[in-house]
Image (cartoon, helix red, strand yellow):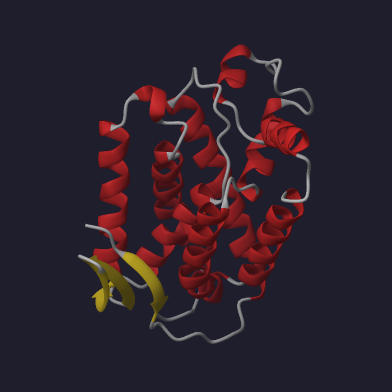
Length: 227
C-alpha cells in the first residue's frame, strides 16, 4: 500500500528557519545543476556523490576524479537525481522537519541532520560495498528527522493520500503508524531487492539514518520543552 504524507497537524511555536534554509540550499543546488551540459552534469554527480566502491578501494575510481571519497559523505546529501527525488525529499523535510527543529532549536537541528546524513551514507556504503553507482540525496538525513518526529510526536496526526484505483483519498493517521509503516517498508525493500539494484534506492541509508535519529534524538532536544 502506498501512503503519501502531505501535512501534519502538530502545532509550531516558531518559524522553522533551519528547515527552510536546508530546503533552499537543496533546491537551489538542484536547479543550478539543471543548467549544466549533460557531460558536466554526469561528472558533477560522480565527483560529489558517495560511491561505495571507492571506500572499499580507499581511492577515487576513474570516473570520479576530485576530492577524497570521505568528502562525499557530506556533499552527497545535498544532491538529487531528478524532480521526483527532490520533491519527495523536500516534502518529507517540510512536513516533519519543522516540528523537530521546533523542539531542538535551529543549530542543534542542523547538527542532528548532518550527523544522521553522514551515518546514513556509511550505512549505504557498507550495505553495497562493491557498488559503483553514485548514492546521493537528502533521504538519509531526513530519515533521521522522521525517527526524531516519531519519538517526539508519536500520537500526532498526519494527513496522507492513499491511492485507490484511479483516485486519491485523504486520510488522517497517527504518526506512529505512518512512520512505522515507512520504516518497515525500507527494511523489507532492502531484504528483497537484489544487491545489484540497491544503487537505485538507498534503502540502507534510509535504515541507517532512521536508527541514528532514534538513538541521537534525546541528546539534541532542548531541556524543559514539553510535548
